Amino acid sequence: MGTVLEKTLPLQILTVTAVAILATIGVYGIVALIVRMDGVLVKALPVIIKLLGFVGTIALILVACGIFLHNIEYLHRLFSKFPSILAEFLLGLAAGLIMVIALAGGKRVLSLFK
Image (cartoon, rainbow, N blue to C red; front, side, top):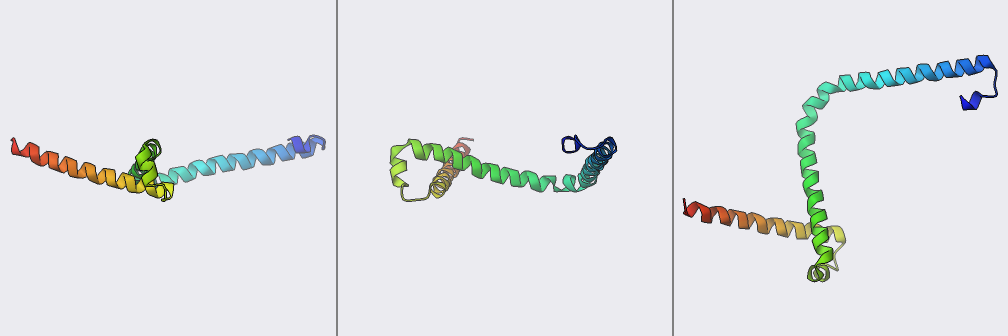
């Protein structure tokens, strides 16, 4: 409306009408697209959830190991030659492997007492 403020009234009415029609078609078109996509989204949801779980786990590992890497001087010096993201990933991989081994060993020890 601001671009046709100085124009004649019929041109202002025509401009506002055209914008209103385009906006209405656009909004209802997007809603119709979402409704049509509903079936596809429901089918894709398990894959999306697994992908988000995987990406979230990697992000958690990188953030947590970044905290350790930058706050523990020994680790900071040990990995100083590596790019930060690679150092964080390697540290996370090592910590995860240690935890898997510890938990597996713990389960074995507990199973001996049953």
